[in-house]
Image (cartoon, rainbow, N blue to C red; front, side):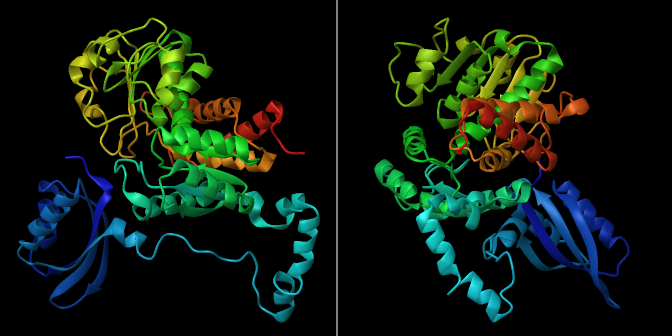
Length: 464
């Protein structure tokens, strides 16, 4: 049973002064598959001690089972049980604060009326001054319609709002970028494009998030053509950037060349198409993508959206058939599809010590413990396994670099530069269980920002 902080419970427990009661508590939690991660004493009385525990579980039912088990113990009384994840979301995760205090009427007169009119008039006369005298140059819109939320699917705009708030927190935490979560109550492609274009003057960049394929491709492409600020669909490009970084380090570790690898991908949605594009741009030449109808190749039926590009630009050997046929003797498996879609037998049919990136979240295409003896390197999208392919390694630095450079778009070269910076950040700590930096490594965004900004200037996409 694999526990995770995502299913942690805070327990306020009264333990009566009886021999062995704390030991019985800890033993019961362990035998029930829980993991105590925090413990502190809050109050001691003559008959009892009140302690606070945080216990990680594996899912919601496991949390309920743990509470029931603890509640049955002699000498133990549960005062309160609270889901930690829901607790930190209570009231939302964001707030807006001013950059300076309005502590007297002089400041009020400059920040607002009448002084603000002078700044507004200056910008109306020369709109480029908005980059200097408003927060636009450090403000990103995080936009979603809630149709493709990771692991949940189409849950609507309100269901997506906590995810967008979390994204905004990550922008601020890792790159000091202000951002606004915007969820749209429409799935109409034209209406989304019109709405984002209409609000764009407030922002220095647009981060599209959790919009289902194939609509996400058209929405991003058309907004990029319409706007003079970076438009970046993170589900596509953030995932692709970190995947390339991980694969570059896996190649370095195993002495392989990216151009020689036989790569099989399962999943031809937004992330799958973007990964194939960035891998090809970085030099991979043997990529076969597989969807529910089998290998994708030129002339196959059931092609739409990004699959048209995959059919034209990948699978030069025209591999056909299902995953069993496509994966045989392959060096790399990349999954951005569904839980449990890859079997141990299929991994055994691959080349010696294959590279397995099972990125479906929260449940991977195959659990690492099932293939740890036959795979050379394994990565997932989860934080509780080694080698987490986490977009937070990419998007804060990409936007920081683009904003600082005054970039009007994010080019393919800028994405590859971001991947190379992420790969380099591992440094001498490179190993089979450390092919990408840890998600909380604060140095990564700075390195990515520099690489992206430098590349933006070389690509000539920066405003004067």
